[in-house]
Length: 98
Image (cartoon, rainbow, N blue to C red):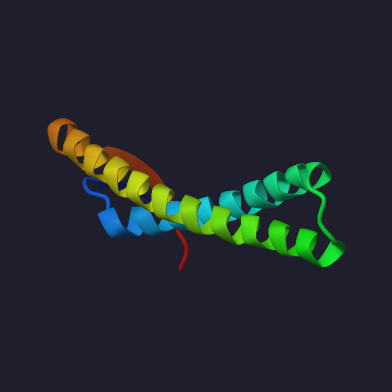
C-alpha cells in the first residue's frame, strides 16, 4: 500500500450540486413524511385521503429540497473554487492499493 498526497484545486460545480441534490432528496423525503404525519391528526379526512396527503407531502418535500440543495451545492462549489484558487488548494493524503 502506497500513500500519495494529491492537491484538490477545483471541484466540479454540477458534480457537487448533484451530490447535494441526492442528500436533499433524502432529507426532503423524510421531512415531508414527518410533516405529513404531523398534520394528519388536525385534518378530518378518510384513511385513503390521509395516506395520499402524506405521500404528496413526501414527494413535494423531496422535489423541493432536491432543487434547493442542488442550487446550494453549486453555489458552495463555486465559492470553494474561488477559495482554492486563492489558497492553492487542499492537500489530501490517499492510500493507493495495487
